[in-house]
Length: 248
Ligand SMILES: Nc1ncnc2c1ncn2[C@@H]1O[C@H](COP(=O)(O)OP(=O)(O)OP(=O)(O)O)[C@@H](O)[C@H]1O
Ligand SMILES: [Mg+2]
View 1: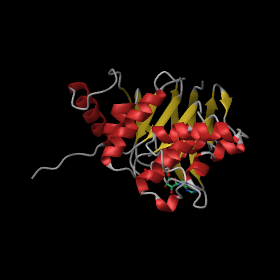
View 2: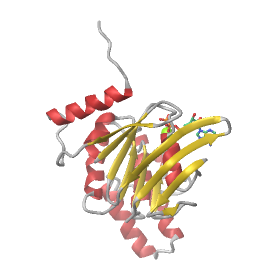
View 3: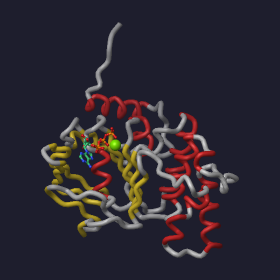
View 4: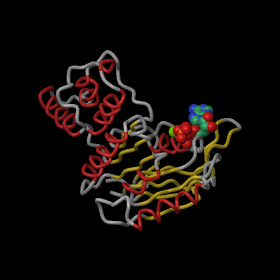
């Protein structure tokens, strides 16, 4: 179980300040989401927690210890799926288990279970090129889930999915997370998705990204997207993002 702490983090790429004094904590077992405009540094935050990027100033901590490198307990699902084209679905999803020297029989069982969860059973022997865009994305989600990590870092995982699959996957994610003790940080452009899924939603400003608001969603689950409270939170977040409206 892991608490993730981002302590006064600033990130620069050369002269470009991408993140400015970001400070927040995701408690053990909490489901947090970040919404914010394109280019504000959301993926960079995730990459730092995944150990793929370091802070220019400030600290990135897991249970109080600096995160220095990638760790199989903290898995990042990328914005673009990244499957090996020469491996089948089963071989792609089982790759991490193979590296961890999990025996073939157990590997097949665990891969089978997660493929079932993401609706891909029967496609074990397909190659990525033989899958639809949404199926590829589900295979890449399966590849992370099969490792059973303590921390799940999701970068727009459902962006490429059709609306119906997206709703199904959101429910699957909640099922998987509830009672698991997993700490989740989800990046999404979809405000509804954030309010439907997360306990806490951080709203970021345009670059250099700052946290401009922390919104608590403590509605019981499953959440009703049409409830007064849901609508109110959605509007509150849209207000922070300053998207505005137009009149005819
Ligand atoms: N490795 C890098 N080298 C230089 N600049 C980078 C690097 N990675 C990201 N950036 C810059 O940091 C800024 C934030 O990028 P990031 O990918 O974190 O944004 P984002 O909020 O995830 O955007 P989107 O919503 O479009 O995915 C961008 O201006 C980008 O050009
Ligand atoms: Mg991004």
